[in-house]
Image (cartoon, rainbow, N blue to C red; front, side):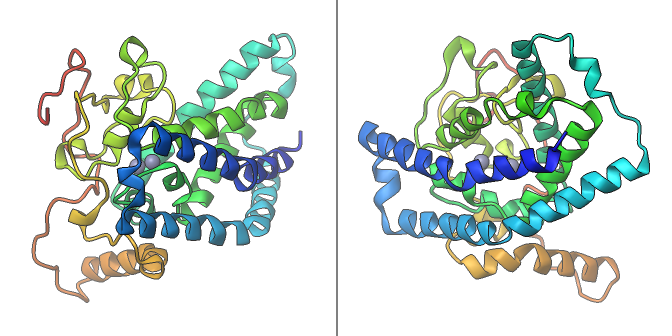
Length: 304
Ligand SMILES: [Zn+2]
Ligand SMILES: [Zn+2]
């Protein structure tokens, strides 16, 4: 099994076909009526930063692929327990695709959950820094986040021994869905809201409102949030986007790129007493200890 090859293929999809998908979906969103959120000066500045992250991340793709291949080799050399790929031979291909999809959702949920922890947040704050969330926001991830997500994926795929064809099937669809849920549309999916994530579901994840922090962590299947107690389903989207209240800038690419390193340095400095603790700031989405919400009959209990 060529896992590294599969992952490089995934990354290629992100870099070429999906950027075209984003353009199409974003154009559709503009036509449908989300145009006001896309054409202000600040919105364009935010999208420019998102694209700068996309571009800068493509520059490190070969190194990431190399590191992935090294990780897979190291994983094999360690002789860690894993399922044999032959274990899946009797399983029909459509079922394999479903299993791979749900496994993928599971690791995305938990890696995303780690990114919302105290030490993971400085990396993930970059994705949350966009104050005008749209399809391009999907690409606004720090290269370290790409590494973290890839490592989680490699551990899962290596352990399960899933055929790459099954693991790769539908990757483009999942990616386009991710573009869709970042669209500036307050759309809900009614009775299917627990099965397929809607723009409202994910845009609440990006809301700069204390009650929304650390909720709706799933990628495409909100059921995982319901299962693990982080589901939140307000009636409408009525909160600002971004992480400004946590002090994260929205349009300064260089500051955002160095943000994780500066934050970790500050946190370590505080921990060893080199730097005094700053005055209390507004509550930032730094930990999982924040209040979380279970399904409440489809109604908001705090913000509606
Ligand atoms: Zn997040
Ligand atoms: Zn997002």
